[in-house]
Image (cartoon, rainbow, N blue to C red):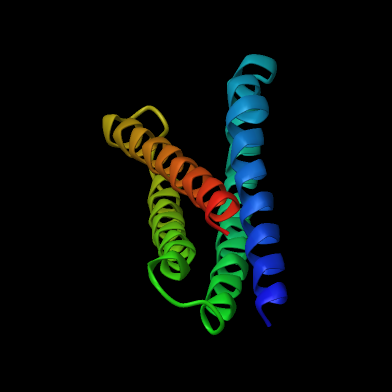
Length: 141
């Protein structure tokens, strides 16, 4: 059971961390530079619901993996991956709710801009939390 849990944790956290990194490094900086603003906006509107759905699914997978591992391991070390999974799911859900609200607003409004900054900050925190979880799990186990 522990091996399956470890596989689920590593698969979920690795794919999610890689997806966040790819979005920040390859997609986000280039979308508005390469495409006209209206096309870039439509592309972003199409990408982010899938991105957050993937974050929730992979977050669920890594959380399930951490819970399966907890059935065998005990102590504080066994809780860290689970806490990372819970924080990830809560933050991704929050960012998804922000996106839903942003899609109903004008992209030029001050409220839209503030919400966009908040969603970027949440994504950065998710990345740091996930990176901590992956490094901790690799070193502590």
